[in-house]
Figure 1 (cartoon, rainbow, N blue to C red):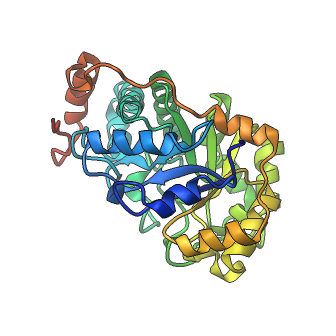
Figure 2: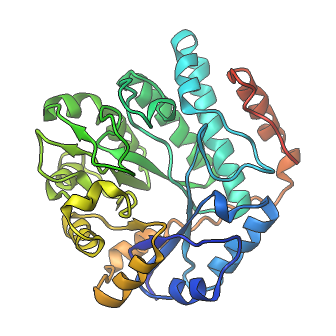
Length: 346
């Protein structure tokens, strides 16, 4: 059975009968896990094993483990700093900051591999323009070059851990003020400005063979009448101008930003027609069921093969809590934490 295009969520810390039935549907390709699905490292390891036992090849497991305000799994793992602290360190210690960013990418990937996770939806490549009400500490820096260098190091570290990465939010969410979870954000800048600044980190990530790129739900009015998730123009730029050959992921289609462009079912089709390979739909099980029952979402052989390659076979078999590299990195991270964010919980 091929892996499908849809990536969905589950409600609890174990699989329900409905979860099991839906996850076996051929249009499903993965599961994204949230804080509500996590009670301990041991529990999430068991949950992931149960998810992966349902299909062959196994479903892909995803999580948002960025650091700072966006860290889904905490208890028993390292409490991660926000990416902005690395950017702050870069101002006075660029070499040290780049080294630490690579270490952070490895550390997150190492811990997620221990849990059985395949893909981390990080790093954030957005530029902090000081305008967004949700992106500020999630961004490495307000300088595109610094974001490029720090994200390059983070991705390199993640690759060494064996985890796959999805960078986001193409082509850049940092200039738009509002939150796409609740409304449609606007970016009125011209294409040349966006291309020269916001796309700089993506060019390097593509050179590093990033496994996935996630689209934003921002409307760039000077470029297209549709946000990138449902914009053939923006995704052609990604494929043709930036020469990206990996998987394109939509951001969560249940976000309210897309409401004015149609119903969920319509936007799924628009997203696929525009060029998205994988579609996130979270926190709306009824809509997922409706979509599975009413539209055709066949994956191509090429898409399915790319998705299967995300399976992480590099699971940590050792005692991660005694791993000397991990402990040293945690010690290094403590030095940039202004609020003592880093701690080890065994």
